[in-house]
Image (cartoon, rainbow, N blue to C red; front, side, top):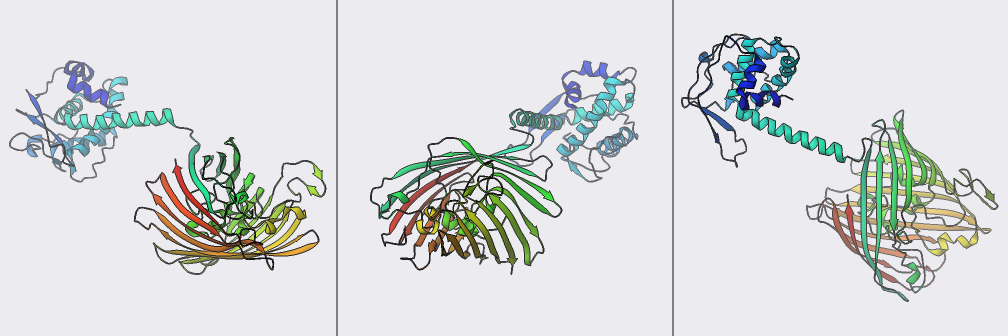
Length: 533
């Protein structure tokens, strides 16, 4: 790089003389130099050259006499601004035109450090010419370069140190980069939780969930999602006085911290939309808007505490392997249409009636949604899903939502039609509302159950001006209508954001009738700590 050239000017005058092949003509140089450093706390501090004497020289490359436009003050200190017309400025302009280098002068006054950057650019250009083609740069022009590098050596030193620092950083990034095509993102959760009341036998537990997401792109417009996950957070519903599947938290995984593939999908553009293909564990929410507002973190641990509060249960119907897309239509009104087909056990090559595996087996879902934007603040969607289930209905995210009667796998294979409405309203930068209502007609065991669910929330994003989030949610998890009591769900949380990477979320979940048959309420306490990296 250019630093090798101009450093030789300062450090080795004899070597420079040989490199430049200086013969008959000699150049007057300062007899002594002293470097004075400006105060380091000044934002635009420059190291100024002070010389005891100067002597005009022939400038070549345009032959402008330096005496006509002096660039030093009466004390011999170089001016802090180099202006068009100064001999240095004109000399570098002429040199740039002659040797096709670009110092970025733009015919405007510039600081010494900016001038040094331009000079450095020209030195970078002529250095290989001097080394490879002796005589390609005239001796007169070499004298000009020597004079300029002598006069701006402090600024060139500063530029070189910055370039060296950049080179080191680039080298470090290249040595430590994970991949040229893949970004690594992660989430680790420590979850302290327990049933505070309404439990037959319950402990306060410390559970965890860890995810590593590899986000790869091969064209710049596509994304390959590969996620590894582990965890041990159990469901607390088995400890209620009346056991249930309501109140499930987003971080529930069960298990014993065994690492495995948690999600594999590929997204790529086709015409004016993106096509989403899930090989494993795809969700309806991966390609369709859910209007969960600030409660929704797409099964992550930075939004609502429970899987129910993050979005409508209709988005928990179906999933697995399949394809989906969101087709844009307009900016307002009907903005897009979401379509998808997914199946569980899509990799099964065998059939065991009445359960059939494979991509078009008996555990599948056909999804359609109309998405609307009625104003800059109000958005919503109308959803329909035709689905078939070998076991539970509302388990598409891996966390079961709804009462045991609503899911009821004991009745065998279920076919269902589900209809839903969801909306999100942003009242201001500090207040947002969201809500949903849905119904499912489930046909199983020779009967048809009408399953209902609804809810609404208010959230306060950036409540403290530092990115924290407060939320209150009230609703009823999926339940069979006309049977027992409505299983109301009350949830409140406050996510305190310590930094962009760490947050802690204390909160409470109260369930009035978890099994919708008895009225044994349950209160769950949660303190969730989320690390993002």
